[in-house]
Amino acid sequence: MRYAQNNRTRVHRRLALLGIVAALSLGLGFSLGRWTAPKTPAKTKTVVVKAKAKPAKKAGSSLPRAINNTMQEALERPLAQQHFSGTALMVKHNRIVAEYSAGYANAARKRLNTADTMFQIDSLQKSLTAGLVMQQMVLGKLALTTPVGQFYSRLQGEPTLTVAHLLHMNSGLSTPHTLVPKYQSDAQLVAYDAAHLTVRPKTLGQYAYMPVNYVLLAGILEQITQQDYQQLFMGLYRDRLALKHTAMAYDLSATQPVATGYSLKGSNLYAEPQFVSKDTMHAELGTGQVYMSATDLFRAEQALVSGKLLGVTPAALYPAGQHYGGGFYLNEPQALHANGSGYGFLSTVQISRDGQSGVVILGNVQGQNRARFLNTATQLWQQYLL
Image (cartoon, rainbow, N blue to C red; front, side, top):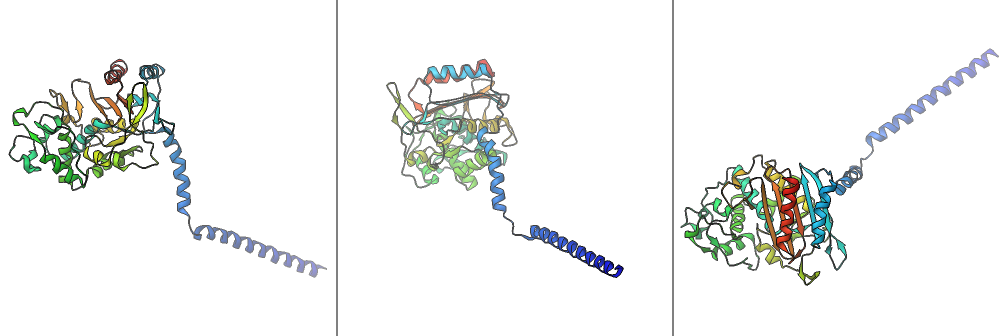
């Protein structure tokens, strides 16, 4: 009996031991399986990116929102009275305090304007071109006093004509209108403009708004960097600031939320959509060939004028005593402002010199009361943001 009992006990112990070994083997095998199994990082990364992308898409920018009801009404009311079609934004102390979108981005498709809609910013681009010039100054490759003749043989006989004159549009250089040759390259385009310049040395130092000044600046940038303007622009603004709704007019994709420009006809805002050739958009090199959302535009301007983008405040672009400089009008001591119009679009920006507050209005119907449109931006700035 005792022998049988002891035998059964030994059998039970052996079975228990085998069970423990089996369990350990299974556990070790499971652990080794986790450690040595093929990884699927792409799938995991996709899930993580989607989780992060959703709030970013909803926010539309890194600017925090603190909507102020009074300012919201002050923004909406005058624009609604003007039958505004586009997107507008007010920023105070680095917070979006009011935003408004109205009308159609594409009337034929019934697609509405939204905060993400991209508009052609027209001449507002000149301020960002000036930022690219400042970038090269910071790198020591260019100076305000650099003679323009170093880059254009046509102007070698004008040693007193400098980069500063181009920036301030008091160079004495002009063309009768935007010149639109058949596009081959930026270098070919700039050479064509340079060959067709009217040069008036006696008007050197006198302000005259001539976009060709900024075409020549774009050409200088390409010569000293050996990069094309698009690379320079996207590298400094879109890539460094992670802008999501910024593109060249000749390089738009069908998936981007781009507004069509319209020309007003009677009371019909959307009767005449504007279709512009790629040759024309290339011809606006450095002067009016970029599409941006209102938020992207403000962020780019803010980063530039505050000095955060380049590491230095670009005060040299906006000197006291000049009517125009660095793509902005300088007649107000506490703000920089610029306007744009063309190809069915109308735009304006007013921004404080520290970049913390401002108004952006981007419209996609040209031909409405431009003075009233610009006056609205000025009133909003003076009443709520100054």
